[in-house]
Amino acid sequence: MNKVVEIIYVVIALGVLFVLLGIRVVETGYRGVKVRFGEVIGEPKPEGLYFVNPITTKIIKMDVQTTKDRIRTECYTKDVIQSTVVIDIIYYAEPAKVHELYRTLGSAYAEKILDPNVLAALKDVVGKYEAADLIGERNKASSEIKERLELSLEGFGIKVLRVVLADIGYDRDLDGAFERVQIAKLDALAAKHRTAQIQEEAVQKVAMATAEAEVMRIRAEMLEKKEE
Image 1 (cartoon, helix red, strand yellow):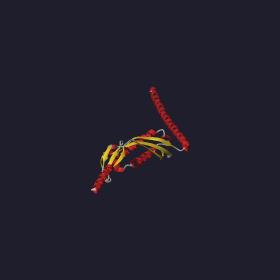
Image 2: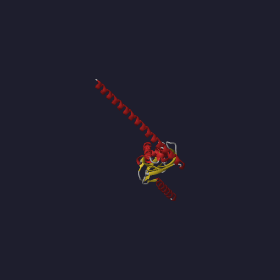
Image 3: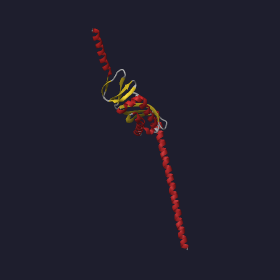
Image 4: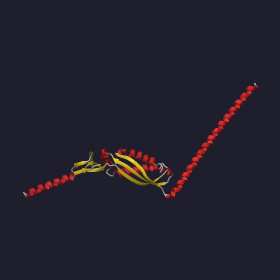
């Protein structure tokens, strides 16, 4: 009889343990992805308490809160000057699509898809600007990077809210190079103005010559009429 009671206690204990091991909680700001034998099952689970078979099934918690990542990297500008750029990306995973995101990339999706796309977009956009212009055009450059990221990440269920070029740094030895670039730009602008001026003067000379020729023609006609 005692052995029967012991067996009953053991069964009850195992049952309680099984229930406790199968309890899963999805906290606020997360969605649960149900995985059975490595396969994603069903739609994302909202916040709440769930019970699963702890032997066959687990619930992966995916963060759907707004997240800020900061990346620091080296880029080259259009005029091949190396810059150190710090970029901030504010984004979140769409709650209704986190199961597909997990199925495709796993829970470490930021390292696999977000960061590489940020670096690629950053280097492409920075490469369009000259070093002397990039700092003043950082808002425009940030918008261009954001547009590229929205297109590349849309299919993964990642929403980009904001992109900010937080810092753009150059070597101090480049101060003289910047001055030379600015002087070269002013010289080019002055040359362009002189060219336009010369062209305008040429047009005016042609117009004056044409007008003088016309006056001479009219005078000649008047003299001919008088002689008649």
